[in-house]
Length: 418
Image (cartoon, rainbow, N blue to C red; front, top):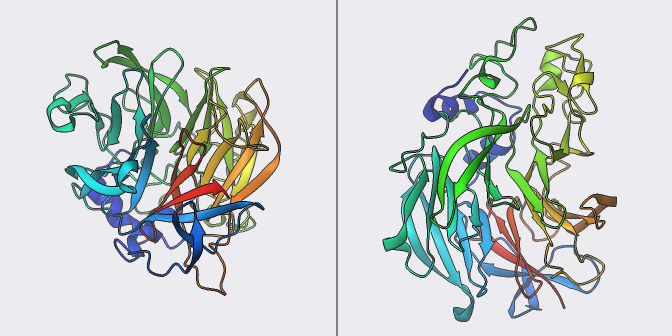
């Protein structure tokens, strides 16, 4: 089932129900964010008319970004932003936005192959996920310190050939290992012409040394930051773009982007309602069900009668097609009350469940508690001056402000308490 990126992208246009990638492809490239109406001031930036909790506001920090995806805050307050550059290979760039210059943008690297995930490693260097691998650099001297960690010239084999979900997210765990996403090559283990999988056989793309739909673990050599051989940390995960570590407990959380077009497999099921996206607690060696099971261990229509009891179900069901693309956990208690210690998630989806920044409060054991809390909404309004928004990356700065990339309109936003 593995296939190379151009073929996968060509197939996207034929999938009318496919949301996230197809919608981005159809969206105006590098929109300037001019469609946003601003009124007043939010922490020194133009204030947007988006819905927030009382006493909070959203400021427009930067525009004309090229499909901004991952974002991470450096200790000095500067921001690193990965810009996809569209869905053609080698059009991406990595940008630095300096706090001391009002977050003015400068280019660190260009001609990157679909950069997405960015993270600061234990060595304080920045790690970037691109198609096929990961590279790192010292933000104090990017050009001279850039080195490949996985793929490229690293000596560590490249990631599997990309398919329908080619982007790489990454996170470091408490012991300094690197965990990253290898997304599924298909929507639901179907062939490019839509032929469903054989219910009598394992999904071909999900097994073997080059398995898709998994989270890989790479042991790292420190202080040099070199990766060694990998193991599969968890499988049965269609697309793990949202990864977040609760540092005190060591718990790794994953936001699952579940399948599309379930109604084509069984017309009795409604695609708008099923399946739910998921929040999963990742435990080593477990299988989380894709493509055999969905929701709370319900057999997929392509695999009727499958025994889903052997698979690990989600910790929480998220709204259907919400498309969680990033998780930020307030490990350093930077957020003001009542959100101190919370988990933040971006819902990128273009359908009813998406276009929001949400939060879950967390207990001391690193487990979400209570109901979902909306921190930013109003992107879906059919009235008023706001365009449809699609948040992607989220990071919590040392001053407690929250930065969000929003790729549909090419913007960087800042949520802060007034």
